[in-house]
Length: 351
Ligand SMILES: Nc1ncnc2c1ncn2[C@@H]1O[C@H](COP(=O)(O)OP(=O)(O)OP(=O)(O)O)[C@@H](O)[C@H]1O
Image (cartoon, rainbow, N blue to C red; front, side, top):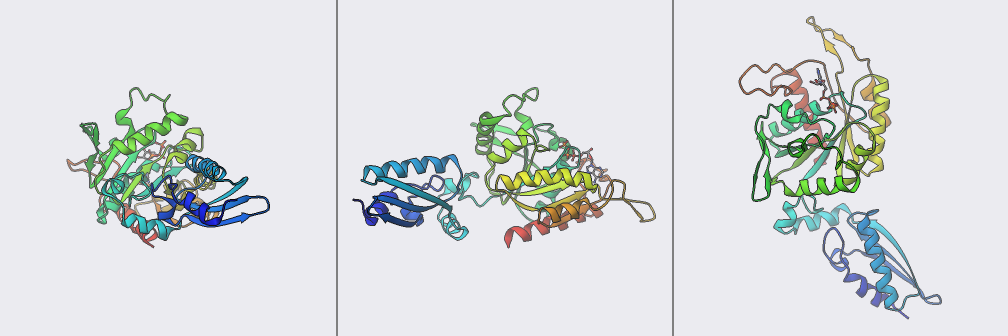
């Protein structure tokens, strides 16, 4: 007959698969109860991330170890470690853990930018939000993961390729943003690998091989839509906050709601909605609602989140040599709107 003390000792030696610290160190054994007449042990365990393959592996190990020690049957419930507990370990992270942006101990905040369909301005919003966050003094990186069409380098006016040295990829620094496009590393758009487990490996490797340095925010321009590839990418991202971009037409917002639903389904918290192409301002200052009206607020309501901002139609008017075709200058009215959105995002993330 196994007793509670023995169960705690056995489980205490197993590791949280994400933190690589023992369950004893993480205080991850929340509850142990034993039904003596049936020799049944039930335990409640906290780990960094539930509903994952890693949880399954740990589950099998727990059952194996407890049965070896004499339990007849084992019941396990998992829950996630609290934010406070994670924060505590973040303070104790080793240098290599803190630099591994995929480690739960990394301080890097992932922000994914998604849309229900193509052409609504997701990449434009990603680029301008990244630049605005940098203008507000944040250390920002941007990954162009829109594998249907890599547009970020052109939008930012990037001419050069990233440097690869000693198997490390050094991002291009542009307008204060460290930028990498997956398109830099793809020949003929090779779409085959962009599926399922292969995609997971590519993304994982990609995240680890880039020399990010010290960053606060990592923005990801996701593929548009709610198809298989978008879903695959969602599932492979580490804990990420998500911004959904829509145009103001109610039908567009309806399609964007599906992207929001996918974010929630993959456990990504929605940070808010950006409505793009909201209106066209005439020379006399009147607003024309060329693409309809109301989509952004409606979507925000539906996703129970906030409308982070509305961006009107209009081109950035860069005319100097340092040309970034899709980036609004800081003193452009739309540049100011992006600063507001960026401030809004910072406030929400530091709450
Ligand atoms: N507010 C705006 N005013 C005028 N043009 C805009 C605005 N936002 C985006 N555009 C233009 O609309 C086109 C589509 O934008 P963008 O590439 O950002 O969309 P997307 O949603 O990322 O599309 P995809 O995912 O298909 O690449 C681009 O030519 C872009 O310059």
